[in-house]
Length: 322
Ligand SMILES: Cc1cc2nc3c(=O)[nH]c(=O)nc-3n(C[C@H](O)[C@H](O)[C@H](O)COP(=O)(O)O)c2cc1C
Image (tube, rainbow, N blue to C red; front, side, top):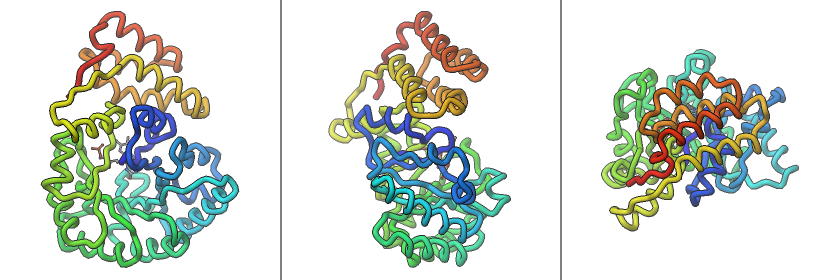
């Protein structure tokens, strides 16, 4: 599954991944329920589920249950008009960005297990036939018991599956997530548990679903660095020794085209910068280019910088990856 990531999990990234054969399920970046119910201007872009609407879950975040329910009701009305299938709704109990958490959204819900379960139950009632998932972290303090009780509440409230990013609220990416919590939830809960965090290759993917028993794996940053990662994992599942030729230059240029085609102009620069921040990891000498792209004035300038890099380092145009 593709993880929800602000300014990254948009239609262009899904199109890019779909071009490599896709993944099983995609998540949109989180959409603020309060903004959506008050008709904020950009929600049509956050809620765009193309090119795979039937396999794309929309993630909502809300500081209160009322506006979460109102957003889901509004989505059902908007979607019925468009005749688009809804691949699922996800509730965000994991975001630890200070603005979101302080407002009472994201991971803050993990402090209030009963209220969190009640919100899940109220959404469940509104969408009896639509997949409902919840994405969360470990919470504020490490406690297997508290985590299990929290998750049981969500399952009893009707969540179809849970996604665990096993880091505490304030844990950054530097240290690896604690996957033993994925393993214990997978064992103790009656619904599938998806593991998320630090999956970068076939070894970490197979550990997630093998050793830790996750029902599936959700991939975030690595799917931006290597939009072909799902294709690579599928091939390596058949043949662990498989190596892939990745067209790094063409894929980057194609992403710029997709950003132009499917996002409003006011999004272009920020989304391209975000994408290339990760994508430059594929290059042998990424430091200077990454910095230059972060300071480029527009998409054309990014394209020029990117192409010039390969004139200087042609061997990076296509790289072999395992
Ligand atoms: C730039 C960025 C934005 C993110 N935005 C969201 C979000 O909107 N909703 C969410 O649940 N998680 C969000 N996350 C967390 C990811 O979904 C994921 O849990 C995290 O990156 C760990 O997975 P990874 O190691 O595969 O990247 C974000 C992460 C990043 C790096």
